[in-house]
Length: 247
Image 1 (cartoon, helix red, strand yellow):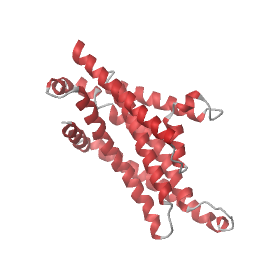
Image 2: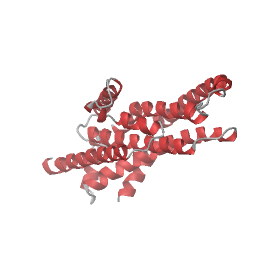
Image 3: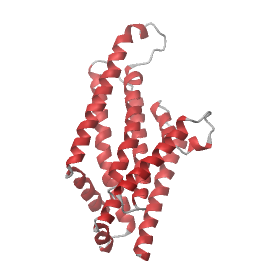
Image 4: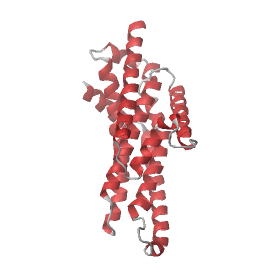
């Protein structure tokens, strides 16, 4: 049943014309930033060749691209999570879904997986763009895979939090603005921290993604993303249970 709901959510995303417009705009932004970074790297390549430990094309081009994608996902995901529950509640389709013989766990996890499959396509398209560099130079595959894993975990954490915000209201716009406000607040807590021991910075998903962005695979960061997603998915399940019980 989880896979059925996930497949329905995944297919419904492509039935909306705005999804194709967003995908087209994203590919244009990613390609523009990619070629801009590549052009800068080619201009300074002769100077970098004189350095003992000069950064390669993966660190100079791919890593900044993935960092940009992380910021774009922060602004993009609320647009999609707002419709997962809030829009269905507004359109009265959530009531029909909850009246079916499916549990709240199936609904939440299915919607979560459905959106994650869509986000994986976006991340995969960026990976393919970067892999084209392999035709002319040697890439740091370890750094690429670490960045890809970091983006997937970051997208999962944003999706779980956005899904919970969407379960709190029946107004999609309110859900989107609320999720974006929280994402932006967490991002500000990260960039405004004066030291690495800042407690608020430790709660920001972007601060944990930075380690992946530099090629550092840390078990603490993995546990953070796992706990972050689990907590907000459980809160969403609890919220749907309350709606089913007291409505």
